[in-house]
Length: 454
Image 1 (tube, rainbow, N blue to C red):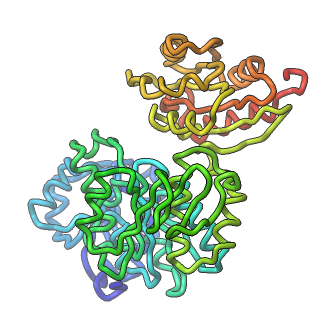
Image 2 (cartoon, rainbow, N blue to C red; image 1 turned 60 degrees about the vertical axis):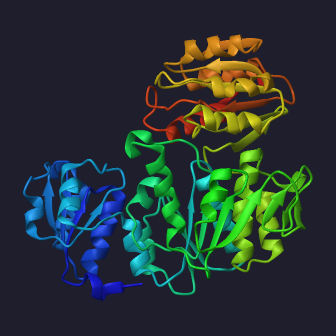
Image 3 (cartoon, helix red, strand yellow; image 1 turned 45 degrees about the horizontal axis):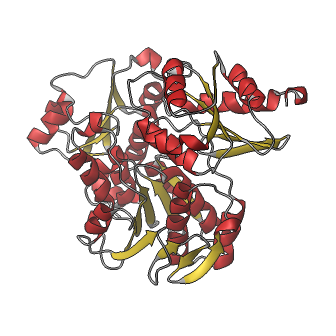
């Protein structure tokens, strides 16, 4: 933990603003660094740049000058979304200038230990579960990272007796150097973000940086049902804590069709866990392992598992009306995520799906479409999704122009005991600016329903 001395009077370039860049620049300025910020948005459209200029930070907006690195910077903090093909980043690598994301900065200034959570799916649910368990166990947790709170801002203020629970994307981890969480969690690894990483190998290597620097005094919690993760775990120095859903084991977390176990001892019956679905059982297992390792008592863990109904827009239970349950899974922007949602319910699903047309396949859903009683399709892919559903043998299909109509048609196709599930398998951008707005539209439509429609 390096604090002020390392950054004092050091020339640092912050490339790209938004929340992470603004926070990193502000933190570094308070640490006494000579900070320059460069962002592509024009100054007049850039409130973050205006605020930084008011603090005395040098701001260059609206362009990326070719000679920017001639200023003699000793470090670059880049926005995670900026690709490494960016000319400034390429120049920096040629010149030997370190390029970090602000997660590395957070680690170096934090007086509090960190728990890092990554994976292709389940990061946010696992992070939220663990935060709630640590809170119930009075462990003074703070939450940060990809979940919405910038890690360096949290780390700057974190007292030594707290713990920072940090959700981490591959974009963020790729820009780390010495980052070493006390506990690292890898929920799973699937092919993703190849447009950014270029190869699946680079994507995996970026994810694996969460545990590369760990020592035998640290813990790696990993999904032992994925052979590649088990192989990776053998290459690390961290103490290994596997979790599996393929039967009771004597080490780590495990589950069979009856209960969740810690080192072979029952923690909770599966019937008592509120979160639905096998994928959420993975998340519960990973979070439970970390909470128990951090010293939480069993009651703190099981209390959360019995009551936590899900993160917003991720198989989120909304309400039960007239014996129909409504779930918002708007975050399911690809077929894999929707497959996980379908797997959570055995039958009687009225599925609302569709969205931005990317030409992607829905075939991953086919093995679970026999659980779907009816489909209401929305967005650009509506026609293609209906054709797919009918080819899978779904008995009832309909198209809808907006979310109100979709929810009304879904209810009209439902019976008592059914589940109305928004799980689009597509991005939202054809109709909504983001998946959150799409999910909120679904929730609003559900609450607007008149009882006479049932």
